[in-house]
Length: 321
Image (tube, rainbow, N blue to C red; front, top):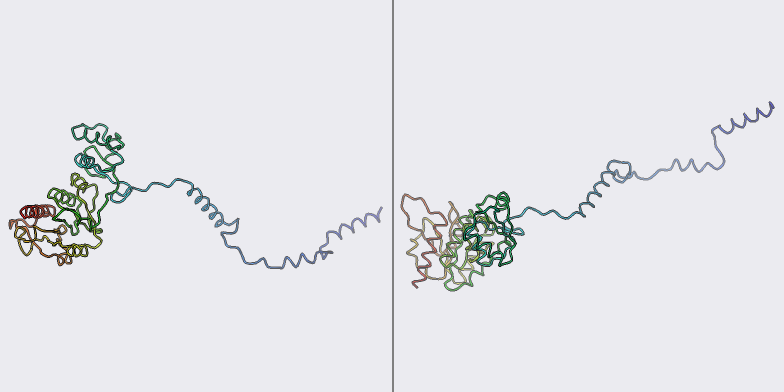
C-alpha cells in the first residue's frame, strides 16, 4: 500500500513539472516568430476607427437607396420660373406661353381678369389649384402677386444674332449693366410698345428676366425677345458689322437725342447702368452718344424713362422715313 502511494505521488509531481516535452520544440519557435506589420486602425475589427468606417459605409449605402431630395428652386434658371400678378399672368396665358401650374388664392375676389385667367389655363391644359395666401407669399418670394401665380419653364433667352432677324428697320435696346429687374421689365415693356426688335443684356453682373422683371413688363416679355451677350462690346461690334448704328445715351452726350441723324435707320440704343451710366468700353463702341435735354434742376432721368424716350424718338423717326 505504502509503495503504491509513493508511486502515485511521484507520477503526479512528474506530470506537473515544467520542462521540455516530446514533440513541443516547434511550438516554441513559432512563438518567437514575428507577426508581420501592424494592420491599420480601420482594418482592426476591435478598433473604434474600424467601427466608424463600417458605420460610414452603412450610412452611404442607405443614402444611395433613398430618393434624392429636391433642391431649392432657382427662380432665374431652375426647373421652373414664376409669373405673378393678374396682368402679367393674363398676358402670359394670352400669348400661349407654356405653363405647368396656376395657383390662385382660395378666397380671391374674382374679377374679369381672374375669370379669363382660369378659363385660359383650363383651355391650355394648365393645372389649377387653390392655395392659401401664405403659400402664394412663399412662391412669390416677396413680390406682389395679387392672388395669382403661374409656374412656367425658365425664361428662354434668344441669341444676340436672333435680334437681327426682325422686320426692317431693326431697333435693339441694349442695357449696359442695369441692375434693377424692375427697370429691365419697364424697358422691355417700352421696347415692345414702340416696335423694337428685342433687348440685349449682359450675361453677368446685370438683372435678368426674374419674377420682378416679368411683373413690371406686364407680359411684354412673352412678346419681345431678350438676348444675353457674353461680351457686350464684342456683340455691339458685331451689330455694327451687320449694318446697325450704335447710339449711346448719356447726360453729357455729343448732341441732343432729337437732333441725331441715326434714329431712322437700323439702330442699337444703349442705356447705361443706374447711377454709373455707360461703361468706358461700351461708350467707345458707340457711333454716337446723345443726351436727352432736361431741366437744369433735375440731375438725371431714370434709366427706364430715358430708354422709353429714346425708343419713342426712334420709332417716330422711322415712321417719317
